[in-house]
Image 1 (cartoon, rainbow, N blue to C red):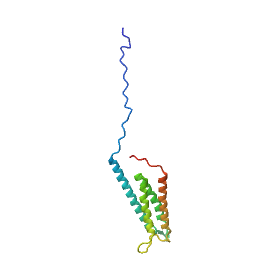
Image 2 (cartoon, rainbow, N blue to C red):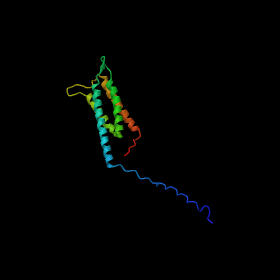
Image 3 (tube, helix red, strand yellow):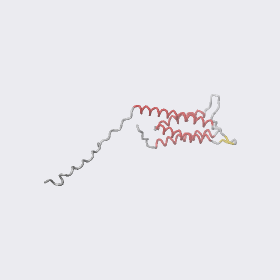
Length: 159
């Protein structure tokens, strides 16, 4: 005589588990590397252009006066502008050394402006405190950017 368990259907099989190994991540293509180099180069060139424009604008605003009194707007612009340019240089390229060309160009332009021209004129006169404050504040801005970059951990990149 057959038992009651003989007539039951067999238990269902458990569903197949997915494989434990996952496929390895694809390696970045050469095209991505070329694009990264082009974007880094464009970022450096743009920050150098910003640095040149900043230095020239600040030199033009050295002698701004209100009621015959120098107001020092170029010193404030030098500090804020250089902090922004340094921040932008790093954020756009994710490389610390890209800040260096912009800082050196700005410093070269302002120090050359402090010297005498071939005609004997000075762009930053000795009795103009704003010019010297601009050089000091701008240099302070670059110093702050450099200290922040040196003391921060390296950025994580995708490639």
